[in-house]
Image 1: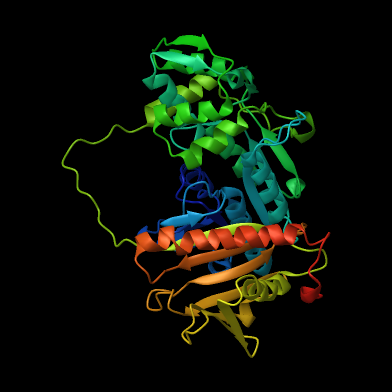
Image 2: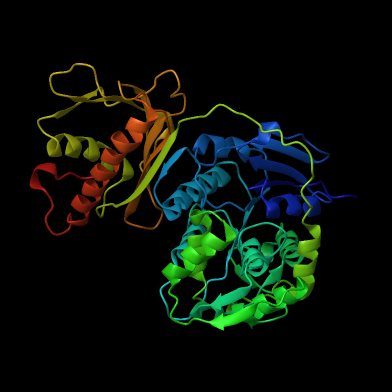
Length: 473
């Protein structure tokens, strides 16, 4: 008797790994493909597309409805709004936390997460690798078994690291070799990664485990660039420049490749760490890739489709002037996200007294305004049905600073990071009412300044807690 096909959610399905993974999984599974623009894509046999914004918990819950297994291929390096304030690390916290909570609620049996190799070289982890490890911890914080597949540089036709490397070799007549090019790495071919992910589906022996995967060769980045140059029939001169710092390297790579700084900078910062399979994270039959770097590079270059010649037809879409602002703050020991939300409003009035006044109505409505004006700057409505002790959600429901007609999903949330005395304060899908140029250089800057002061205030909490604000969660 044929076993029933399990439903597998692929978050990040429109990315190059997601697209290729679905081709492999669809042979034995029904796929729910999540993308922010899923409604624009056509369903295929055993593949159903869903639009899903993982910054929204309710979207995540709807996206994972009916799923047995969930594959997490998401990162937040690129901006997700017209104005994005905050680090990718803090954005990743929200995405992973929503996904993990939704998986728990929908009864998902396993989360499979593609991460990066976490080195044990004694150095502080780069922000990118530190974020990957934090995401791994958050995904498992609500009880759903997590299988983490950790890979170094993935050799494929698209993605992030390999195209940057390819463009360096392609565009330069000579290669500047900073110190990080001597760091050892263990690149792995995309097909080997896909095979590992496929074998991890519904594999109970891997529940709660992290598996390092790598190709058959260990080499330095210098050796890898030389091999790639040979594959591309190029022979650039290699020049050692050991004094070229990481900061200068980031600028140099961005200038040469034309890649966005949001992608280049975190990746270059991670190159000081050796990306080699750790013995304690090796699993027989999964950790060892079989495709050499040269074979993988040649296949990736051949797969890149040449640009079609013809008349360029641009696609125009309405410009959405939305804002996402995310900041991480300390959370005083023993206090909740719900408490910090209420405390923030009172702190704001005290700090900006007498100019700013806050009014709270029946614990569900809050108005923030200025003296001598009865019309509030912002009006917030508490979403009791979507809030918990660890997450307080307020909808931006009015005020002269909000475009009420467009703020359908505008919201402010306070969220505790699982396992840490830290919280995230985030504004999502906010549509300001004032002209964009003025907003960007006035209200947006003022918000960052206020959040900086609030964070500094909380950092001093354990040593000098303000007596007039003492409270318990």
